[in-house]
Length: 96
Image 1 (tube, helix red, strand yellow):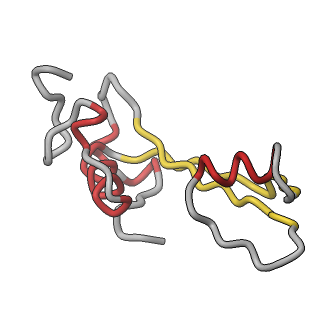
Image 2: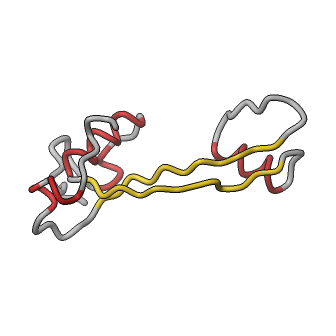
C-alpha cells in the first residue's frame, strides 16, 4: 500500500471535513490478438468498444483518503491538486 493511503478509521484528518476524497483502483482485462499496449484511457475505451479488443472490469476498489493523502495521490498520478480546488496542503483554494 503506498504511503499516501490510510484506512479510514486511522486518519484523524478525515473527521469533520465537508468534502470527501477517494482513490479508486480499477482493473481491466483486455483480450486481443497481440499484447495490448495501453496508450491512454480514451484509446482503451475505443479499443474495447469499437476496436478489435474485448474488455471487462475485473475488480474495483475505492479507498477514502485524507486531504493530504489525496494531494499526494494527485502528485503521484501527475495531476495538479488545484484541479480539485485544493492547495499543496490539502486546503480548499479560495477559488475552489
